[in-house]
Image 1 (spheres, one colour):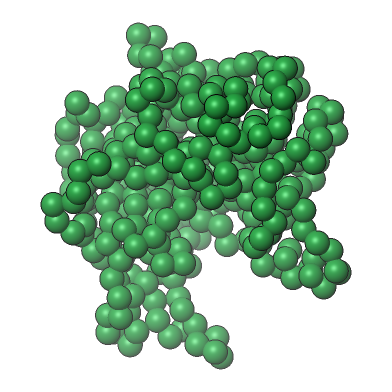
Image 2: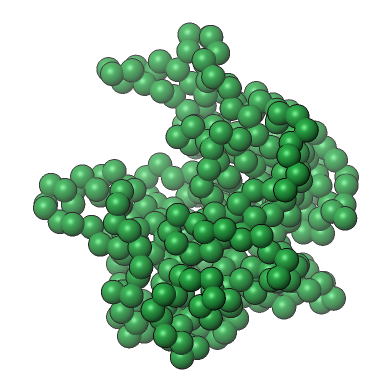
Length: 364
């Protein structure tokens, strides 16, 4: 990877009594499915790890292998496989019902229970009741479940399904490569915090992949990505229809954005300040009707407990002409996140401070 030639631009400033306490830098790019950059700020070629933002593409392996028909998978189950869920009862019930119906044991999940679940109210209730949370409440349990199902379908030993050379991971690697229009041997891989492989791409290629997610049917037959377009549509439709399963019912940006713009945005975050949005075709406040695009942003310092990614994400969607009016009001707490004092009074706020530049460049 090439080192940066200069620092990325400031995207968000943390203000207290009008004084800047800190600044969060990063990169933003919006791309259509053909690779044309519509907006960019910073370095569109900055290579970043997908982390959990890989999930909508990794689960294509199960669908391509016929898993939806074989296991009679329903849209909520597919949505939670693409999720970094909050570990609420809604997520657990969805997964447990799937495990019971398919005859695959949830005991095969190989995940940590540290910091599980991430939903604070659910964690408090479990602690109050003396209940130890299981691995199924881990945010990545749905994604890991897809590998257990894929192993059953392929007749593979599910033990150590998380290893790079396990057939389930090889299938996922191939699916990710096809969704990004490349080959598996060219992928730059790493190990995610949950133990399975993840992959790194330039930010604008991530945005292009999310544009593909937004409208898979628009991909021409000669495009190599068309081989996974049918499965990609299944994933998109599930994410759009069940946003609470993609994130959670409380204070999850992915869910809140999708609910504010029903049927228009499938959102998925990755760790360390990455946010990705699949924006389906439709009317915008700027530019009239626009085809499918993907918008991806990366906060350089990892996100500062999400305040920077939240503020920058909402503002980027506003400047792209996607958000305004009532949907924007619904996302106000994310647009300018407040830091309260010990008495609950607003003491500081994160304010987005950037301007997206319109471009017309093709990915080469």
